[in-house]
Each structure stands twice: as C-alpha cells, then as structure tokens.
Image (cartoon, rainbow, N blue to C red; front, side, top):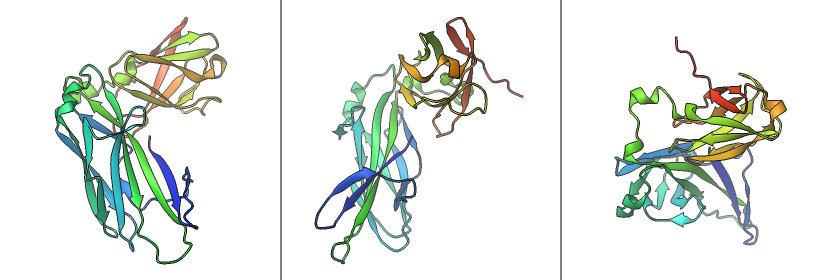
Length: 251
C-alpha cells in the first residue's frame, strides 16, 4: 500500500506538513506500490521517473525499519539523492550490506522505502512550493522462503484462518510471510462492511478485524494485496468458531 505525504515550504520560511490530497500529483513517481527483496539477490532496482516535463527535480531515497526509524543497514538505498531531468527516468538501487546475514531467515522482515521529491528553488518571493513523498512497504524475503512459479499457484494467503471471538473475527496468519488485508465483505463482490480498517498481519501473528460478526456473516470474504499489488479475494466457510478458506476452482 502506497502512502504519499506532502511537504510545503516557503511563505516567510514557514514549513507545513500534511497528508497529500488525492488530487496532488507527484513529479517524482515510483513504478510500484510495494517491494519484495528476495534473499538470493544482492540488490533490487526500482524505476523512478520525473513526470514534470519542464523542471528538473531532486529525488531523495532512504529506508526505515518497521518502527519508522531511518536506517542505513542491513539494507541501503543508493544513490541517496539524485537529479532527474524533466521527463526523464532513472533508478534507485536497494542493496544488502553484510549485516543482512543477521536478519531472521525463517520469516520476512518489514522495511519501508521512502522517495521524496525536492523541487527546484523558485526565483519568486513568498512562493509556496509543494514536495510529495512516497512511502511503500519493502519485504525482505529470505532465500529459504522464495517460492517457485508452481508453488506460487497456491498463494500462502489461503492458509489464513478466522476465529470467532466474542462479537468479531480474529485473523490468524500461520505463515512466515506478511499478509495485508485491505477489505472485508459478507459476500463475493459485496460492499465493505462498516467499521473495517486495513490490517497487516506479521508472520505467525493474529489480529482482530473491524466489523462485527453480524455484518460479516458466516461466509466472510477478505481482500488482500499480493506481491504485484493485485487484490485477490479469499472466501471463508465457517464451522462453529473456526473458518477456513474455500480454495478457488480452476477451469
């Protein structure tokens, strides 16, 4: 899931921070909404572009850990700052350092990749300049957890289970992967239930879902985000307090 922030500068030196509105358009754009860094590789290249056709922009890149703290190891983003000409494309490389060997090898580790645009300085006095920042999840996936194309035909998200606890469902992730659930409904192609908020389940963890049992019914449908930014659904069938995914039929 991509998050964009807006930084405003100027107006007698006042600096304001706010979430960008849906109509704001970044000049420096990233080619994906999430990054999967596979542990058998030394680096991964991310494509960026300057969508402004008239002005050059600086692109600043860095990584944060799961707590949002800026880090330069065990992964690092290079170059940290670069100039991108009007309408041009470039790349940012995220690469491992020796400390990557200390990361857990039995589960994914979460980082955040940040890309901030820095606009050229305006020659006009008291000018408001707006800079946008993109922040996406980066999952470091150890070599032992990389699946083959055949194995990927059965998504690990299908191992997700639900448990009825009180007046709500609890989602259980038994896998070594992060699972991000972004929507919930009581039927296929149904509307989102009231009170639901997206939730990211860490490996081998559980978390309650928004929306109550009555609104989700006995056959809830969850939407998750896959490696490619797609949004497949999971249909559940409940037997008592336990709910399992009903595998999709092929053909």
